[in-house]
Image (cartoon, rainbow, N blue to C red):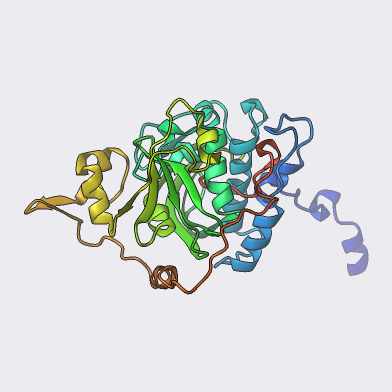
Length: 355
């Protein structure tokens, strides 16, 4: 009978297809590596990213479907950034192919994980300029400079253009300038830019290769490193102070103006003038993606056609910064101004930082 025939079907025909292998947790959970226990953490414990995750959830531009390629890529990068910033033992990194991993910014010479561990994620992606220089900064001072200025700096994937093994995608990195920017520039000067309370929003493109475990092998990122500084000081106005170059970078960032040389105020009103000040050749060597196409005409630096204009959003920031009647709070929150070893960053810096 028909019913009996069905009941007598061979077991192999009725068996279900084998389940697909489970994806690594660093692809499905943005906080996967934060849960690692038997590893070494830079400050003795896993960092707290809860504030940045909250800002990300509330202000992100894209909401990717769970399990989609954009979400998987986003989670991979977030976990990679945590490891690059806070796991000082490379063998503890789970998101990279240890034999093939390398990282490069704007076509620079690729470097391994050791280089990023030594200088920090901020210093690994920023070329020396009039606002900041990795040459005069170290891991500790770089985190003080950027974390205090922006307590959170969220990161998201906007678009994914190709899938594994070569993954190319566009990303966004954003935050709010709540406190003054204090850093050390390419001349060894202490640079201060007053907090304007506005947004800082940068974008870039990354092309990465991954292995069969979806671990990062080659990471190549392109973005305009000066875009963030143009938004930090939208009017180009900063205070520069000569300091004792024998001081530790972190101490310079922490120091007050007492005993320092008389500050000088400078104004740089456009990226064209910034390139001119740096020298076109130096700007190109520093990795500025627009300097390569800039040319001098009648003694002036001219940017190539198609150079991006400042977005309307930044025009609003400029307008707000000019409002002399507006009182801007620049006092540091005690939570952000405590002992640095306890200042565990709660956000990544893409790909820097990237995160």
